[in-house]
Length: 353
Image 1 (cartoon, rainbow, N blue to C red):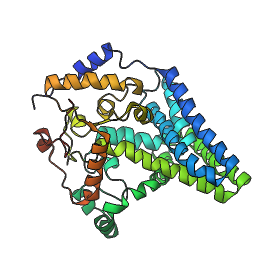
Image 2: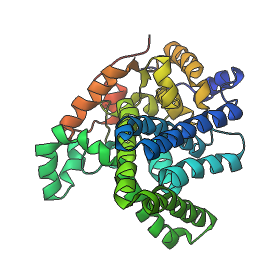
Image 3: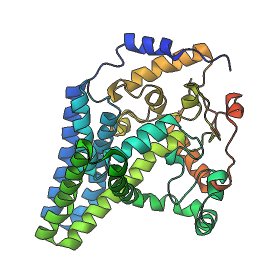
């Protein structure tokens, strides 16, 4: 590859095309629609019972996943031009609606994942407990986990995605418990505690008093288990199956070497909240999701002109690639970043047309 071009030139081109312009009112209507569908499904379950739940719980999971991902946009400060409203939608969609700590998410996702995508030992998204994506991470695990990864990872990964949200909530509570040791009980911590308390009261305590603890727990668990599966279906194909490196190339092209876009029908793309355009999201996380399709066209053309990799593959191709990689991730060697820079751009090796 040629010398790394200056990212500022691409940023300026995107800025002139209006790609950083917010569509906040449109996003609020979208969030209201998504939450409205979830609420309607829950009312339908309450009115018509278990038979209705068989259909309505999966529907609610789809819409709940998209609503939560609008909190992801707020965390990246791309939902609104107002810092206050970005924070508001983050707390609304994460701890209040989803039961997921915004403070934990900013550490895990915004800082570690976005800062170090596919870097062994740093990116938490490529080592979802109890699984691993590299031999190096595998060898550092306790003996019983190494046995599990060798014997069970190939078939257990996808079924266990149903536990993803439970694991993230556990990590959220641990993060909140430990947070005051470093930062004290500041305003953000108290807001988190209030939102988390409200979440569990509204989702579990009140319904338990009306319909009984078993019914409330089963509906809650089933809905958020579905969200866990869907979140993995959104995030995994964008990175898993691409190079995992021992250390990071200290320039922005590293993001492109470890990230790919996912080609989807428009009606499915609606629910991804821009995360089918992971390349542009990673290099410019403040671009609102409404603008990402056009931003991807501009970025792809710019990358072609400068000889920079820009990967975009059909969604099912990327999903299969991710599944094959994770099946035997425990025996994959992390690459030297210079190997990747020399042209090993993933097992897919697909560039945008």
